[in-house]
Length: 407
Ligand code: BGC
Image 1 (tube, helix red, strand yellow):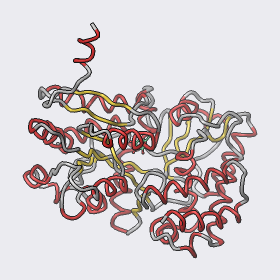
Image 2 (cartoon, rainbow, N blue to C red; image 1 turned 90 degrees about the vertical axis):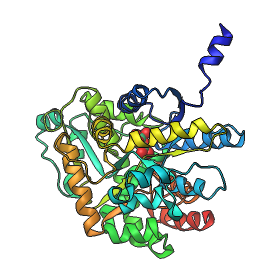
Image 3 (cartoon, rainbow, N blue to C red; image 1 turned 90 degrees about the horizontal axis):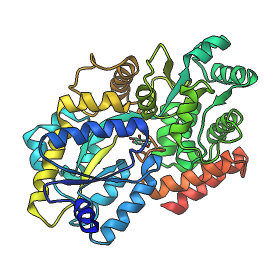
Image 4 (cartoon, helix red, strand yellow; image 1 turned 60 degrees about the vertical axis):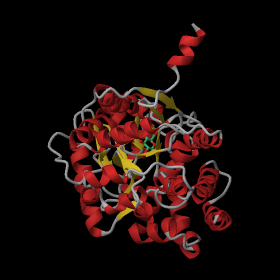
């Protein structure tokens, strides 16, 4: 019995062992689309889930596996983490042959290729594009309270206040650093637009990081803090989504993986829930893209399975089937939007428009603005401020110091 179990848990070369953090209901449903697709091709799946939104815990688990000489076959990864691994000699598999044969160069947008094809070599297969500056709202709650969809930051604050006064949880939130950082993407954008976001979050300009505008961004975070419930600390993001789904809360600011939870619960956009950009951030999109990075394996057969997985991921049919469930939009620009729901259609249009206008920006909260060391330093300051350790002016000063120390 013990032997059978041990054998069952060992990946064969022609199988894939996949490390990921898709453990919430909507995420698991999306993952099943990939699992089933591969299984239909005779590729087995050994699951290595590491819970924790944003993937920090997954990245820690990955480092331990690679250090032990036992890298998984394929790993879900975000932006700058991919670049970090790309700089390690001889660790990653090269997907260039598949990418060239399938012409990924022509269909994957440049903003994503920056991470999938560093130094001219394809090392990751992008699954999707998510974006973080979204609000998810319970439509029945809004209707009952006479709240119209807010279009400015001040209207949003007024709507949150109405919900709070009516005894609802105004803002469903989970107190975890990455969730606060997710809101921070929007606080920075709503304060100073794309230019300020670029200067502070991406260029890491100390002046922008310590500016009066940054103080105002922290003030927006403090406003949000006043609308969360007493039990927010440590709550998982999908439980916060559930509070909006079941009408306990009015709003959640979260990336569009939250839509996966609404869809998984049988909810319909426009009827049961609303999706709109965080008021004050319209026209800008803070994006992140989940990619699968393949790690070199001892057996040659593993490369066959890895290439098959990469091919499956980039197939247009898979991009549609998967992203409809996940809440994201396709990583390919040539996939038609007609089969997608209204939130995704809106997301696809806004993504294309932002790319055109130069307002498509990498999400700091989700590893697409700056390297992990800087991101984690920012997380610490943002969370400390959210929990009342710093006032906004001190937080901006601390941000400058933390970013400097992390570089
Ligand atoms: C990932 C999403 C995931 C979310 C919450 C993000 O960083 O890109 O795919 O659903 O974290 O776990």
